[in-house]
Image (cartoon, rainbow, N blue to C red; front, side, top):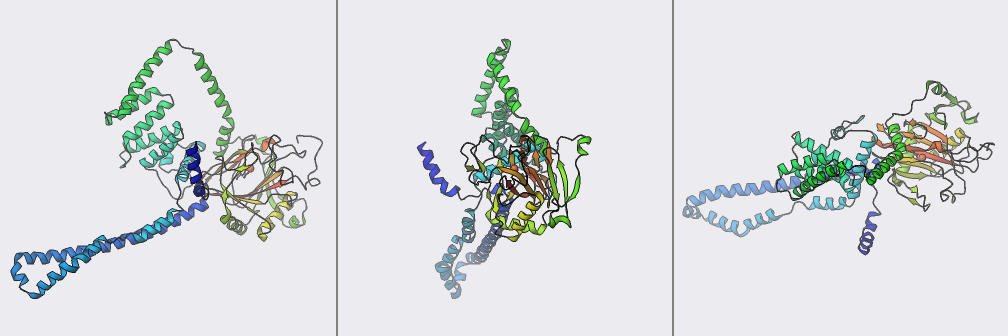
Length: 532
Ligand code: OGA
Ligand code: FE2
């Protein structure tokens, strides 16, 4: 325990400044540039090393010729006084110079560049984060391991594939997370690629070792034995495999015995908890289905009641002559989308303002009410105030005009960037009664409504989905969606539970405005009923 505390204390000052690269594309583009600079520096180093070797070669060739003639007739050769002088000079100074040249370190420039840049390199945590993002995408989008490894994803511009070694690496990361399901998938893929003849430094024995263990952990004893047998064919002396084999045989025999006297109460219990675990799945399942675009289809009758229209913000003077396009995305809860509601120039300005300030997004810890980072919210975000740019201020006014709600009590404009694998799992935007009041400090009441701008298209993935009701809203650059989180009574509308699906390919930019209750008393008065 003490050791742990000491180690943590030492590590923190370094890791706290770290930026979680994998959560946003913005920071990763810097890495690409760094890598490019390093390659230039590496090439310079190679050139210097080559020219050094060239000089040494020339010297060797010259001496080779010289000694050849000299040794043929040493006395005649040295009879020439210039030859005698040159021999002295060579041995006394020139060989020394050559020695210096051979010893000269040409790598200085490259190594010092490397040392400087390395401070900003991703660390183990980033690598694990990126690997976990891949595994998450694999699950959410039902991608089979082979498709992912061969890089056959929808909408990719730059195809890329995984080597057997990469697959092995992913398997190992899953293994350290005790995620034997993915360990099996990725070790199997590594093995498959090696069996197909891929040249690699990955070792089949190692792969089989992990694979058989993962398979055993998932309860497939027969397969685990088969794999261990295969391992032993490659390395008959493998100690652990030999031990495992004996153990598997022993378990196998015992199981056969047990099967004779079945209906073990403990087993029954295990089965029941398994069922319970599965019962817990539905939201996750629904979420993933919606992310894949396998949403509930509305009945045609219900669909017919969704319209699109020109909207003037209830005769708002700013929109009477130029109303905006508005369409219904969903009926209950009502979700509307505004089209062409933010221009490309405005988007660029907002992104540029936000970029230098992007940092890992946080969530309210329901137990402490404090802000923390969480695996279920992976993105980077920044807050922009209306004071800092006329563009932000104009955007705030637009939201006020089109929602009819007072934005002076709203939170500042939040800008978020999701990199590949970036997501925000199902959540409510409003604070629940059983939570420590997350918005108490603000003094503006609960989050009455959400306005969400899509500031980029996403090549694949990245939908905003509502698992309770089965709605998927797809990002479309320049549009915005709006919904109320609370009923007019102030009660939370639980059907607004929503999520941002992981980005599969590309990069997602959104910005949102959370409007609060205060100031809306006359703009959205409460009704007599609690739940409408
Ligand atoms: C949020 C949110 C949805 C999205 O930030 O609260 O739900 O699609 N975002 O980014
Ligand atoms: Fe949200």
